[in-house]
Image (cartoon, rainbow, N blue to C red; front, side, top):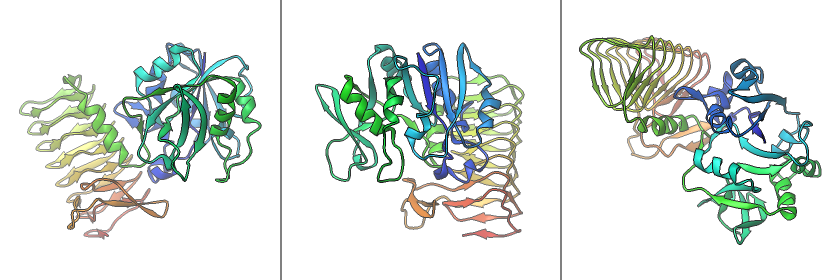
Length: 394
């Protein structure tokens, strides 16, 4: 059996975080998003074709040519837009090859995906949704799909395509007949429509959500999801005397938590990270490789990636801090609006509701702030930006 994983997109809704990192390579705890699906596939699938384009060289640098015994191949997508274009010119798949097709930036429930594959029946993962107008929606009869409509503007049903297609290689030939859609894309759902007219196509309902990272603040949701699952602590690094720990934590080798620090709730500290004395680290916080939490710094519910430093006397709540960031002392951000409403963030020139009453900011690669920088809630500090002493980011 073969797998195709679509990983070619730029992740524009995640900018500026994806300025330097393809979306499928963004990590949740210790693994990139795409690797969670590799873990499910590696003992079932012989070969996985990864469709790449944006910063495609980073995928091979990270994974090379095998994941366990599963062979990895890299297919660079053409310039044509849409999901069909991502797979239509793959040439080394035969018509009778069974194929599982997944998105590389979604984490699928392991049990559901494994069941779909092992059933050896053509089909798809689906879920009932409240907003069918943003999905591909299946019509069904006797649990078999009879049609699929992409983003219907009028209500027809609420059974949404969650991807996870089990098909054969004939789908690729069918996709070559697809015409460009009204959204000016070549969409794989048009190929699925032709496929289900020829083959029985079963719809497997999901009892749990697929974990999607649409926006930067979804990293906080994913971080919380996995940290909440910790039932015991795992300590390979160093915890000095007089550290207070209330919750389950992971401290990887060569990480250090220094004396006087107080950790409350489930947290994660990657290799070579350092927590300095008197720091206060609160639940659902991840601190990545070679990042530093300084003296008397408070961090809560935040995602701090590699090589970033929060030296001293600052506080970070409900925020995403990317690579190579230096937040100098007395860095402060508010996380609540006076009117109590949800925060909105500017994404692709539109304000998007985060669904969060508490949200600080998104701090991109290479940001360097001067002493006593203050930031309004829900703001984005762009890649390699800097601030002046006492500057207020509104």
